[in-house]
Length: 171
Image (cartoon, rainbow, N blue to C red; front, side):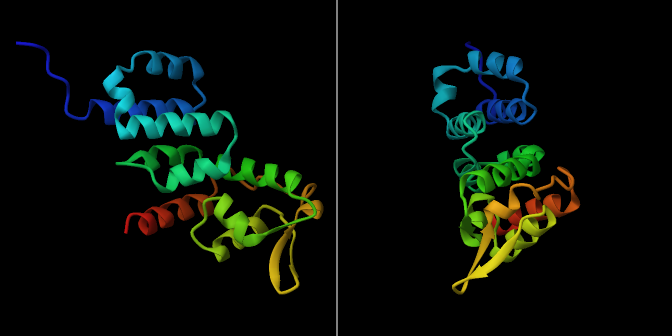
């Protein structure tokens, strides 16, 4: 009799990849990736985890939050470890890149927020300057560059938003 593969082996391999990515444990991540079989690399959860790793490494936050919203199994719970950090980095990166203004709607999508109102609250809590221009709500990126602050990377607002989003995306 041959050895039998555990039923959820690939799912848990994906969780290990995500955990190493979230904790920036690059050495262990490489070890985990080297242990992946060809079959594991074809599993949806592992493919997702590898795409998350790539998005984190390239700081592609738009892709990262799209992956967060579409996470298979319980992967989004592992990703919650770093959501607050990723959102803050995405915000900092955005106000430097999108001058003079960027729409709040775009920022809500970029930051992986479920609603524009939760994005506005997040933006204000982190010091972003918003204004109404020609009937649309925008972030004044130029004015926000020097005012963005981390508040707390593990603030209850971020944890609460992550839990709220999980309920929304699981429906």
